[in-house]
Length: 202
Image 1: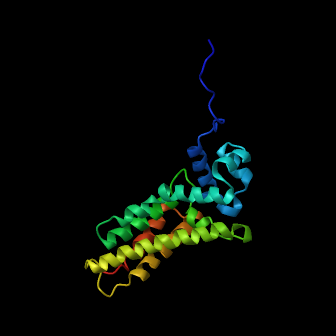
Image 2: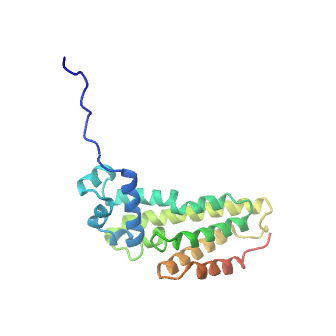
Image 3: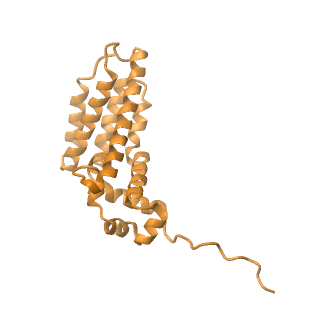
């Protein structure tokens, strides 16, 4: 009697897409968008270019997916910081998260959102534009949270939520650049602590 079981449609991917994306994220984090060649990416991911294109699209699409993974993983400290009960605690958690993530053992130093677009030429314009949007989204979220703090009386009525958000983003980006240059966690936490001394009183 012949078997009526049908063969599976299509071929199995043969690799763990989640793990491959994690490895791609680390390559982009360490080398930036333009510095990460397709050979670097596929070698780290353990797949062929054909498999990469089939699973993730082109390099630009892969970078966007890697940035999403970074946002939901290593950079998730930003979203958690916004949930803190006071504006000062938001700022403290945000900068502490920046220090921790940019100096984390076993991960590239610095921030994918900063390194990803440094010295980007024409071929990296798409990635650079995506990162501008990414950073602006982070700043906007902080600004909105600080507007709420003003409304709730947690920040003084004359506090400037836009300026405070940009201040935090500028300090965090500077921390990332310093970390990529080899500055250690303890020193960078001192920078974060110094920045918070200028925080407006409730």
